[in-house]
Amino acid sequence: MTDERLMKQIGKRVRQLRLARGLKQEGMCRFGFEYKYYQRIEYGQKNLSLKTLNKLAKAFGVPVAELFRFD
Image (tube, rainbow, N blue to C red; front, side):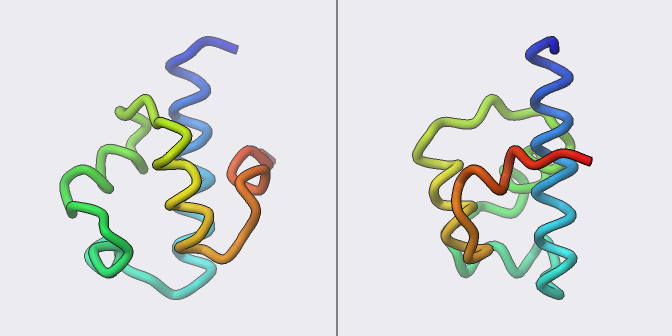
């Protein structure tokens, strides 16, 4: 899998988790994400650090590994 494909897959998964919790992109600000930055995560345009992956997992109440569960 290419780096770009992985970033797209993570972005898609993050979007799924957000929607499953009934959150809007703007709502991710309460978890410490800048709106535009968070958008770029979902669009697969950000190479995420371990800290950001952990922050996302905490926001969704899931283990970090859940972010890598692709359909």
